[in-house]
Every structure is written in C-alpha cells, then in structure tokens.
Amino acid sequence: MKTMKKSFALVAYLMIVGLWGLAITAMLDVLLGVSWAVLAMAALTQDRTTQKKQTGLKAYKVKAATKIFAGAMVAIDATGFAVPADDADGLRVVGAAYQQADNSLGADGAIMVLVEAPIIALFNAVSITQAMVGQVMYVVDDNTFDDALGTNAIKAGRLVEFVSATSGWIEIEPTGPGVTLADADATYGQPEADLINALKAAVNQRLLS
Image 1 (cartoon, rainbow, N blue to C red):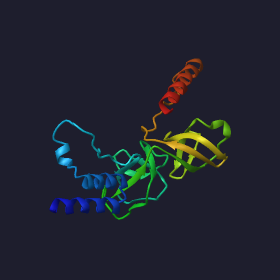
Image 2 (image 1 turned 120 degrees about the vertical axis):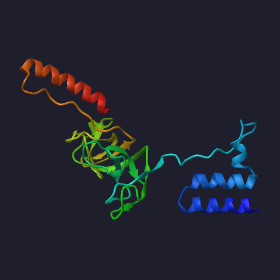
Image 3 (image 1 turned 30 degrees about the vertical axis):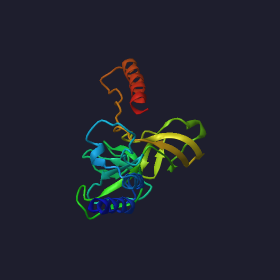
Image 4 (image 1 turned 45 degrees about the vertical axis):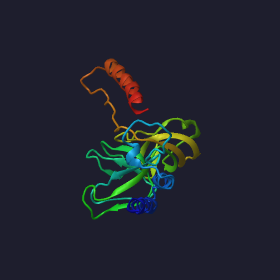
C-alpha cells in the first residue's frame, strides 16, 4: 500500500510540473502492477512501458542575472548556461523557450529553462526573400534572424517558410558555436588573397550549413 501511495504521489508530481509523458507512463505501471525496479533487474521476457523524456523538450541551467522570455530563441554560452540567443561570440542555439525563466536575481544555474528542439517556429527577420527558403539563417537577437552572418555567425536555423520580408518560419535544432575563418590579411598579394578568400568562403559555408 505504501508503494502504491508513493507511485500515485509521483504521478501527481509529474502532472504538476507538466511532464505528461512520464506521468502517463507511471500511471500505466501502477494500474498494470508493473514494478520499474523489477523490470530493470534483468533482460526482458515480455513487453514493457519504457520511461522516456518528453520528446523535443530539455531543461538547461540558466545564466546568472538572466531572464529568458517564453518563445525566445535560447542559446548556451561558453560557460554552459542558457541565455537569450544573440549575435555574441561562442553561443550555440539549442531551441525555443517553452516557458519564461527569470533568473534575474539568481546565481548561475539557480533555475532551469525548458527548451523545445527540434522545432519549426515563426520569428522576425531583418530582410529575407522567398528565394532564401532552405538556406541557413543567423541570429540577430532572441526574436530575430537574418540571412547575413552578422559579427559572430551564430546559426539560428534553416528557413523553411517565407512569410514576408520581415518574418519567416525557421527550423531550429541544437547547433555548434558560430565559427568562421577570417579574410586574408595585407601580407598577401591580391592573387593569393583572392584565392584564400574563395577557399575561406567555401569552408565557412560547410561550417555553417
């Protein structure tokens, strides 16, 4: 009986925090009389309901003195904490905020933000065209993208639907940091510089696509 009460308490908690997938799994286990502990002890001899994290939803620790609004593009900074996406060095876009996370008065990691990814979401654009559908877009801020690399070439996602010159649907999934090679400097003659810059452009396209 105590085990049953604890199981229902777990189901209630999972429902309160919005993890419906896990809550349903736990409820089925309780109703069917299946013990998670027993199932974990040996190889399966029958079907089981496997525990899963909700697909496309992940929690990240939020940076100190940071507020992330619901629906914002979210990035991870060089220290591993979540921040609003921006054209800042070393950021890696990981998805869109499922709900607001206000850590304005907290230390690093004091709270978590739930992030959806992969996701196709509608955001503002600086200046895009129908011809850009399928191309990689880059972060301007947590609510805006553009086809231009910006200063740090932080990849936002791929444009999948053009709405207007200032709006479009982009497919966002976790990415690596924006990394690009620099142009040839003045120590090279013009022919060598042209060749280096052409190679740089090709490499950058591979890095950022």
